[in-house]
Image (cartoon, rainbow, N blue to C red; front, side, top):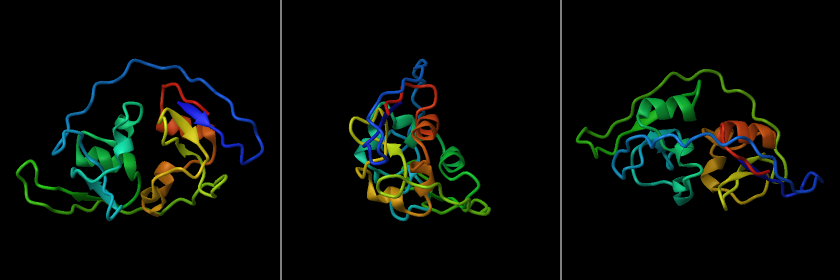
Length: 167
């Protein structure tokens, strides 16, 4: 994971390497062949439709955004939160919504430059940045804490576990 510091906090840009393990095999996908991901609209659950950010297909981050099942997507993307499952019926089942229990929401971490925190750098998608170049959908209150992190190290740890991460 590479952390791209836009130096808003006064620090100079740098690179902090993290070991890069073997690449895991891609999970089986649904409809578009990519799997289950955060539903763009509304952003309150997981979907197997083709409505997602093209940046999510980058090989450095694809396994963070797409999951083999709706349950795994909810578990990873909405831990301890309400998560609805939007089945686009590509596999032959009828579209539907399946709720998952809604526990208390933790407080959001403090942000940097834009006030939101550290996130995956959109380009080249190989590290974390505190700049304001991110998908507007990431600001949705249901998913914001999955995309923005309080520090570059936490961003790398969560978004690029066991991979190189540029700061």
